[in-house]
Length: 186
Ligand code: PRP
Ligand code: MG
Image (cartoon, rainbow, N blue to C red; front, side, top):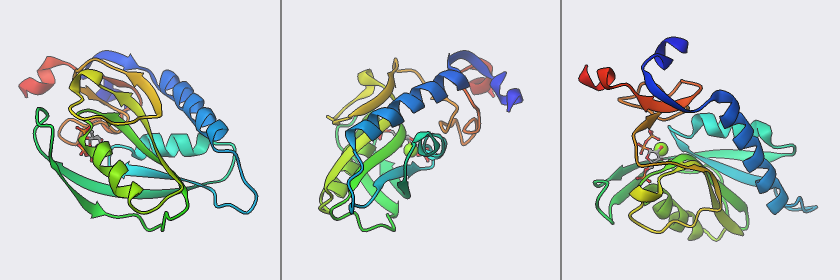
């Protein structure tokens, strides 16, 4: 995917940095969720479509069994609003009652998506619900989100790559960065 990387003005995180940080997050999550004989495996829930890459890499960074499931949601509302509507486009296939769940996403921007998902999943009587996100923009947050695992806090800039898109492009880039102005200029 090197041809798309030439559209980057700045590389914020290289493929190597991303993989190293994900390995650390997976190790933390493992340490916080010890295996209990007779209990179901930890369930990680990826939020389509952006979380596809971080899910795939995080799942393989675990050194023990985990389960993977997916949700797709559609959020409406501007980045400056503190409330918005979230609609489920694809729900879990798993009954999470009594399960330990970690929601995995690649970025928290306003916080709307993960704030809503946390309360939605919490209402299903899981043993626990926690959030893991590769990136978070503290300056963009408009609502409180209790995030246990964060890769990096970043400035409030538009970033692409590793699942993050600009008009559906750049998701398949291995690095994360900001786009060159000529890309917006069309
Ligand atoms: C993006 C991103 C997060 C969410 C964060 O997903 O992948 O899921 O927005 O924004 P928020 O904190 O303001 O809610 P998006 O809904 O754009 O869809 P995508 O994952 O398919 O790209
Ligand atoms: Mg998303």
